[in-house]
Length: 149
Image 1: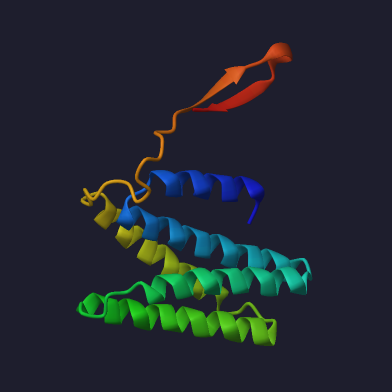
Image 2: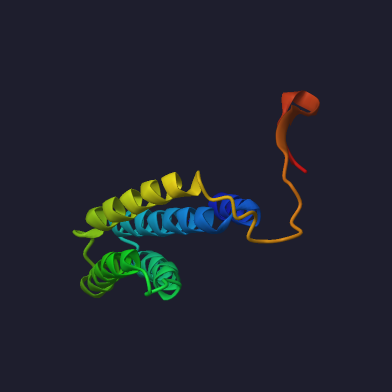
């Protein structure tokens, strides 16, 4: 994951509600899996393993936050377990053959939670965080500058 992606995710987390946090975590997992695929294609096995480990850590966090009193949590747990096993197997075999399927599962979950997030009126997760406004301006010499308030 690039420093720009990390900055973007951090900013979004500071402004999100509970359901949007799940969407962001799904996106982070997807980004790490794609980073692992890139590392494997470039022959960077350490990067491949590191990216898969980070994806697994975020997946474990999602899994541990499930409320098992609800039936949907059991279904999500099964999906998270499948993806986790696939990531571990890919890392052990240094093989990315199931990673596309893992991305597909996580993208479908992200899309579902995006729909749920539209109806979530719970408010920001981080209370007291400032509202962020961003814009672009032209600086001296026609340089484009990003401003975040």
